[in-house]
Image (tube, rainbow, N blue to C red; front, side):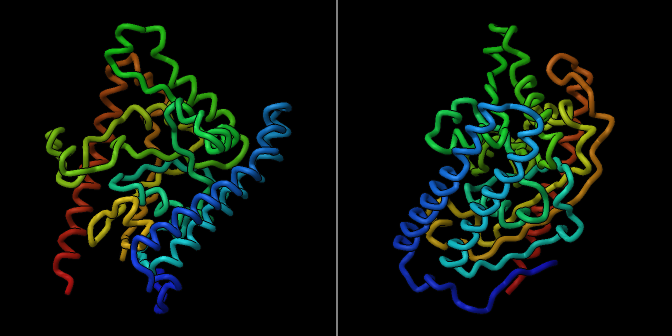
Amino acid sequence: MNRDESPSRAALEFLPGPIRGLISLVLLSLNTIVCCAAIFPLALVKLIVPTAGVRRRIDPLLHGIVEGWIAGNCLWIALMRNVKWEIEGVERLRIDGWYLVEANHQSWADVFVLQKVLSGRIPLVKFPLKRRLIWVPLAGLAWWALDYPFMSRHSEEFLRDHPERRGEDLAAIRKSCEKFRLVPTSVGSFLEGTRFTQEKHAAQGSEYRHLLRPRAGGIALALDAMGEQFEALLDVTIFYPHGAPTLFQFLSGKMERVVVLVRELPVPRELIGGDYANDAESRARVQEWVNGRWSEKDRTLEALRSEWSSRP
Protein backbone atom coordinates (compact mmCIF):
# COMPACT_ATOMS: atom_id res chain seq x y z
CA MET A 1 0.00 0.00 0.00
CA ASN A 2 1.28 3.42 -0.96
CA ARG A 3 1.69 5.65 2.12
CA ASP A 4 1.74 9.42 1.96
CA GLU A 5 2.89 10.38 5.44
CA SER A 6 5.05 13.27 6.62
CA PRO A 7 6.90 12.98 9.95
CA SER A 8 6.77 16.74 10.52
CA ARG A 9 4.02 18.43 12.51
CA ALA A 10 1.46 20.40 10.52
CA ALA A 11 2.10 24.14 10.76
CA LEU A 12 -1.21 24.97 12.50
CA GLU A 13 -1.75 21.70 14.37
CA PHE A 14 -0.98 23.43 17.69
CA LEU A 15 -4.11 25.60 17.43
CA PRO A 16 -7.40 24.58 19.11
CA GLY A 17 -9.77 22.68 16.82
CA PRO A 18 -12.46 25.40 16.55
CA ILE A 19 -9.86 27.99 15.49
CA ARG A 20 -8.44 25.61 12.89
CA GLY A 21 -11.97 24.96 11.65
CA LEU A 22 -12.62 28.69 11.22
CA ILE A 23 -9.29 29.20 9.41
CA SER A 24 -10.05 26.24 7.13
CA LEU A 25 -13.47 27.63 6.29
CA VAL A 26 -11.98 31.03 5.44
CA LEU A 27 -9.23 29.50 3.29
CA LEU A 28 -11.70 27.22 1.49
CA SER A 29 -14.01 30.19 0.82
CA LEU A 30 -11.19 32.40 -0.47
CA ASN A 31 -9.85 29.60 -2.65
CA THR A 32 -13.32 29.03 -4.10
CA ILE A 33 -13.93 32.73 -4.78
CA VAL A 34 -10.59 33.09 -6.59
CA CYS A 35 -11.27 29.95 -8.64
CA CYS A 36 -14.78 31.08 -9.63
CA ALA A 37 -13.51 34.56 -10.53
CA ALA A 38 -10.95 32.99 -12.87
CA ILE A 39 -13.62 30.75 -14.42
CA PHE A 40 -16.12 33.58 -15.03
CA PRO A 41 -14.56 35.14 -18.19
CA LEU A 42 -13.96 31.71 -19.73
CA ALA A 43 -17.58 30.76 -18.98
CA LEU A 44 -18.74 33.87 -20.84
CA VAL A 45 -16.67 32.85 -23.88
CA LYS A 46 -18.29 29.38 -23.83
CA LEU A 47 -21.72 30.95 -23.54
CA ILE A 48 -21.22 33.42 -26.39
CA VAL A 49 -19.32 31.09 -28.74
CA PRO A 50 -20.59 27.54 -28.01
CA THR A 51 -18.57 25.74 -30.68
CA ALA A 52 -16.52 22.55 -30.42
CA GLY A 53 -13.33 24.39 -31.43
CA VAL A 54 -13.71 26.96 -28.66
CA ARG A 55 -14.57 24.22 -26.18
CA ARG A 56 -11.41 22.28 -26.99
CA ARG A 57 -9.35 25.36 -26.15
CA ILE A 58 -11.34 26.59 -23.16
CA ASP A 59 -12.01 23.31 -21.33
CA PRO A 60 -8.33 22.50 -20.56
CA LEU A 61 -7.97 26.00 -19.11
CA LEU A 62 -11.07 25.50 -16.95
CA HIS A 63 -9.80 22.14 -15.77
CA GLY A 64 -6.44 23.70 -14.95
CA ILE A 65 -8.16 26.30 -12.77
CA VAL A 66 -10.05 23.60 -10.89
CA GLU A 67 -6.87 21.56 -10.43
CA GLY A 68 -5.37 24.70 -8.89
CA TRP A 69 -8.38 24.93 -6.58
CA ILE A 70 -7.85 21.29 -5.55
CA ALA A 71 -4.15 21.96 -4.92
CA GLY A 72 -5.14 24.90 -2.70
CA ASN A 73 -7.51 22.68 -0.74
CA CYS A 74 -4.80 20.07 -0.26
CA LEU A 75 -2.50 22.82 1.04
CA TRP A 76 -4.81 24.10 3.78
CA ILE A 77 -5.70 20.52 4.77
CA ALA A 78 -1.98 19.82 5.24
CA LEU A 79 -1.62 22.99 7.32
CA MET A 80 -4.34 21.85 9.73
CA ARG A 81 -3.29 18.27 10.34
CA ASN A 82 -0.58 15.80 9.38
CA VAL A 83 -3.10 13.32 7.98
CA LYS A 84 -1.77 9.81 7.41
CA TRP A 85 -2.86 8.65 3.97
CA GLU A 86 -2.80 5.00 2.92
CA ILE A 87 -3.58 4.71 -0.80
CA GLU A 88 -3.63 1.64 -3.01
CA GLY A 89 -4.28 1.12 -6.71
CA VAL A 90 -3.44 4.48 -8.30
CA GLU A 91 -0.09 3.62 -9.87
CA ARG A 92 -1.39 2.80 -13.37
CA LEU A 93 -4.02 5.51 -13.77
CA ARG A 94 -3.74 7.87 -16.75
CA ILE A 95 -4.43 11.59 -16.91
CA ASP A 96 -5.48 11.31 -20.57
CA GLY A 97 -8.10 8.59 -20.12
CA TRP A 98 -11.87 8.50 -19.63
CA TYR A 99 -13.04 6.90 -16.38
CA LEU A 100 -16.30 6.01 -14.66
CA VAL A 101 -15.73 6.43 -10.90
CA GLU A 102 -17.92 5.11 -8.08
CA ALA A 103 -17.34 5.33 -4.33
CA ASN A 104 -19.01 4.80 -0.98
CA HIS A 105 -20.16 7.92 0.86
CA GLN A 106 -19.84 8.58 4.61
CA SER A 107 -18.87 12.22 5.03
CA TRP A 108 -18.49 15.58 3.28
CA ALA A 109 -14.78 14.83 3.68
CA ASP A 110 -15.15 12.16 0.97
CA VAL A 111 -15.12 14.84 -1.75
CA PHE A 112 -11.80 16.26 -0.52
CA VAL A 113 -10.37 12.75 -0.10
CA LEU A 114 -11.22 11.88 -3.71
CA GLN A 115 -9.67 15.15 -4.85
CA LYS A 116 -6.44 14.36 -2.99
CA VAL A 117 -6.22 10.77 -4.25
CA LEU A 118 -7.28 11.21 -7.89
CA SER A 119 -6.18 14.75 -8.81
CA GLY A 120 -3.31 14.71 -11.27
CA ARG A 121 -3.78 10.99 -11.84
CA ILE A 122 -7.01 11.00 -13.87
CA PRO A 123 -9.02 13.76 -15.56
CA LEU A 124 -11.20 15.96 -13.38
CA VAL A 125 -14.05 13.95 -11.84
CA LYS A 126 -17.51 15.42 -12.54
CA PHE A 127 -20.52 14.39 -10.49
CA PRO A 128 -24.16 14.78 -11.56
CA LEU A 129 -25.77 17.61 -9.56
CA LYS A 130 -29.31 18.51 -8.61
CA ARG A 131 -30.70 21.05 -11.05
CA ARG A 132 -31.41 23.67 -8.39
CA LEU A 133 -27.68 23.89 -7.59
CA ILE A 134 -27.11 25.83 -10.80
CA TRP A 135 -28.44 28.87 -8.89
CA VAL A 136 -25.74 28.68 -6.17
CA PRO A 137 -23.79 31.98 -6.40
CA LEU A 138 -20.42 31.63 -8.18
CA ALA A 139 -20.28 27.82 -7.86
CA GLY A 140 -23.35 27.28 -10.06
CA LEU A 141 -21.74 29.18 -12.91
CA ALA A 142 -18.50 27.25 -12.45
CA TRP A 143 -20.32 23.90 -12.53
CA TRP A 144 -22.17 24.96 -15.69
CA ALA A 145 -18.95 26.05 -17.39
CA LEU A 146 -17.33 22.74 -16.46
CA ASP A 147 -20.29 20.85 -18.00
CA TYR A 148 -21.41 19.14 -14.81
CA PRO A 149 -24.69 17.30 -15.58
CA PHE A 150 -27.68 18.95 -13.86
CA MET A 151 -30.43 16.45 -13.13
CA SER A 152 -34.00 16.74 -11.86
CA ARG A 153 -34.03 13.39 -10.04
CA HIS A 154 -37.81 13.16 -9.89
CA SER A 155 -39.36 10.54 -7.62
CA GLU A 156 -41.10 7.52 -9.13
CA GLU A 157 -44.41 8.88 -7.82
CA PHE A 158 -43.86 12.18 -9.66
CA LEU A 159 -42.95 10.37 -12.88
CA ARG A 160 -46.09 8.26 -12.71
CA ASP A 161 -48.11 11.47 -12.61
CA HIS A 162 -45.93 13.22 -15.22
CA PRO A 163 -44.66 10.51 -17.61
CA GLU A 164 -43.58 13.16 -20.12
CA ARG A 165 -40.77 14.14 -17.70
CA ARG A 166 -39.30 10.63 -17.45
CA GLY A 167 -36.49 11.14 -19.98
CA GLU A 168 -35.22 14.50 -18.68
CA ASP A 169 -32.27 13.19 -16.67
CA LEU A 170 -31.11 10.88 -19.45
CA ALA A 171 -31.25 13.77 -21.91
CA ALA A 172 -29.26 16.00 -19.50
CA ILE A 173 -26.49 13.49 -18.91
CA ARG A 174 -26.33 12.61 -22.61
CA LYS A 175 -25.91 16.30 -23.44
CA SER A 176 -23.04 16.62 -20.96
CA CYS A 177 -21.43 13.37 -22.04
CA GLU A 178 -21.42 14.49 -25.67
CA LYS A 179 -19.25 17.39 -24.53
CA PHE A 180 -17.06 15.06 -22.44
CA ARG A 181 -16.06 13.24 -25.63
CA LEU A 182 -14.01 16.26 -26.70
CA VAL A 183 -11.72 16.36 -23.64
CA PRO A 184 -10.68 13.45 -21.35
CA THR A 185 -13.11 13.41 -18.44
CA SER A 186 -14.07 11.26 -15.46
CA VAL A 187 -17.71 10.86 -14.42
CA GLY A 188 -18.25 10.10 -10.73
CA SER A 189 -21.09 8.73 -8.64
CA PHE A 190 -21.75 8.13 -4.95
CA LEU A 191 -24.09 5.20 -5.54
CA GLU A 192 -25.75 5.43 -2.12
CA GLY A 193 -27.06 8.86 -3.05
CA THR A 194 -26.60 10.16 0.49
CA ARG A 195 -24.07 9.94 3.32
CA PHE A 196 -24.05 6.74 5.38
CA THR A 197 -25.30 6.99 8.97
CA GLN A 198 -26.40 4.25 11.33
CA GLU A 199 -29.86 5.86 11.47
CA LYS A 200 -30.27 5.74 7.68
CA HIS A 201 -28.89 2.21 7.63
CA ALA A 202 -31.47 1.04 10.18
CA ALA A 203 -34.33 2.91 8.48
CA GLN A 204 -33.49 1.26 5.14
CA GLY A 205 -33.07 -2.18 6.63
CA SER A 206 -29.98 -2.38 4.39
CA GLU A 207 -28.69 -5.88 3.77
CA TYR A 208 -25.13 -4.51 3.74
CA ARG A 209 -23.22 -4.16 7.01
CA HIS A 210 -21.36 -0.95 6.23
CA LEU A 211 -23.23 0.54 3.27
CA LEU A 212 -26.62 1.90 2.34
CA ARG A 213 -28.41 0.33 -0.59
CA PRO A 214 -26.98 1.56 -3.91
CA ARG A 215 -29.02 3.46 -6.46
CA ALA A 216 -28.29 2.08 -9.90
CA GLY A 217 -30.00 4.78 -11.97
CA GLY A 218 -27.14 7.28 -12.12
CA ILE A 219 -24.49 4.80 -13.22
CA ALA A 220 -26.96 3.29 -15.71
CA LEU A 221 -27.47 6.72 -17.29
CA ALA A 222 -23.70 7.24 -17.56
CA LEU A 223 -23.22 3.82 -19.16
CA ASP A 224 -26.06 4.44 -21.58
CA ALA A 225 -24.80 7.89 -22.59
CA MET A 226 -21.06 7.29 -22.68
CA GLY A 227 -20.33 3.63 -22.02
CA GLU A 228 -18.20 3.05 -25.11
CA GLN A 229 -16.02 6.05 -24.24
CA PHE A 230 -15.04 4.88 -20.75
CA GLU A 231 -11.75 3.02 -20.63
CA ALA A 232 -12.24 1.60 -17.14
CA LEU A 233 -14.40 1.65 -14.03
CA LEU A 234 -12.65 2.90 -10.88
CA ASP A 235 -14.15 1.27 -7.81
CA VAL A 236 -13.08 3.45 -4.84
CA THR A 237 -13.46 2.33 -1.23
CA ILE A 238 -12.95 5.02 1.43
CA PHE A 239 -12.32 3.90 5.02
CA TYR A 240 -11.72 6.06 8.08
CA PRO A 241 -10.02 3.88 10.75
CA HIS A 242 -10.99 6.28 13.55
CA GLY A 243 -14.52 6.93 12.28
CA ALA A 244 -15.85 9.16 9.50
CA PRO A 245 -15.43 12.83 10.43
CA THR A 246 -18.20 15.39 10.20
CA LEU A 247 -17.54 18.37 7.94
CA PHE A 248 -16.52 20.60 10.84
CA GLN A 249 -14.32 17.89 12.34
CA PHE A 250 -12.61 17.61 8.97
CA LEU A 251 -12.16 21.39 8.70
CA SER A 252 -10.82 21.41 12.27
CA GLY A 253 -8.12 18.87 11.45
CA LYS A 254 -9.72 16.02 13.39
CA MET A 255 -9.24 13.46 10.60
CA GLU A 256 -6.14 11.50 11.61
CA ARG A 257 -5.93 8.78 8.97
CA VAL A 258 -7.73 7.61 5.87
CA VAL A 259 -7.42 4.46 3.77
CA VAL A 260 -8.38 4.60 0.08
CA LEU A 261 -8.45 1.51 -2.12
CA VAL A 262 -8.81 2.06 -5.87
CA ARG A 263 -9.59 -0.89 -8.12
CA GLU A 264 -9.44 -0.48 -11.90
CA LEU A 265 -12.06 -2.75 -13.44
CA PRO A 266 -13.33 -3.31 -16.99
CA VAL A 267 -16.49 -1.45 -17.93
CA PRO A 268 -19.38 -3.98 -18.13
CA ARG A 269 -19.96 -3.86 -21.87
CA GLU A 270 -23.09 -5.99 -21.60
CA LEU A 271 -24.78 -3.13 -19.74
CA ILE A 272 -24.08 -0.48 -22.37
CA GLY A 273 -26.94 0.66 -24.57
CA GLY A 274 -29.78 -0.58 -22.39
CA ASP A 275 -32.96 1.34 -21.60
CA TYR A 276 -32.84 1.46 -17.81
CA ALA A 277 -35.92 3.66 -17.45
CA ASN A 278 -38.30 1.67 -19.63
CA ASP A 279 -36.93 -1.86 -20.02
CA ALA A 280 -37.42 -4.08 -16.94
CA GLU A 281 -34.89 -6.67 -18.14
CA SER A 282 -32.20 -4.03 -18.72
CA ARG A 283 -32.94 -2.48 -15.32
CA ALA A 284 -32.63 -5.86 -13.61
CA ARG A 285 -29.22 -6.52 -15.23
CA VAL A 286 -27.82 -3.19 -14.06
CA GLN A 287 -29.20 -3.61 -10.55
CA GLU A 288 -27.79 -7.14 -10.28
CA TRP A 289 -24.35 -5.90 -11.35
CA VAL A 290 -24.43 -2.90 -8.97
CA ASN A 291 -25.57 -5.09 -6.06
CA GLY A 292 -22.70 -7.47 -6.77
CA ARG A 293 -20.20 -4.62 -6.72
CA TRP A 294 -21.72 -3.38 -3.46
CA SER A 295 -21.54 -6.79 -1.79
CA GLU A 296 -17.85 -6.96 -2.64
CA LYS A 297 -17.25 -3.44 -1.31
CA ASP A 298 -19.07 -4.36 1.90
CA ARG A 299 -16.74 -7.33 2.36
CA THR A 300 -13.75 -5.05 1.73
CA LEU A 301 -14.92 -2.63 4.43
CA GLU A 302 -15.48 -5.51 6.86
CA ALA A 303 -11.93 -6.77 6.20
CA LEU A 304 -10.52 -3.27 6.79
CA ARG A 305 -12.46 -2.95 10.05
CA SER A 306 -11.14 -6.31 11.23
CA GLU A 307 -7.58 -5.39 10.24
CA TRP A 308 -7.64 -2.05 12.04
CA SER A 309 -9.39 -3.37 15.14
CA SER A 310 -6.47 -5.79 15.63
CA ARG A 311 -3.79 -3.10 15.25
CA PRO A 312 -2.19 -1.77 18.44
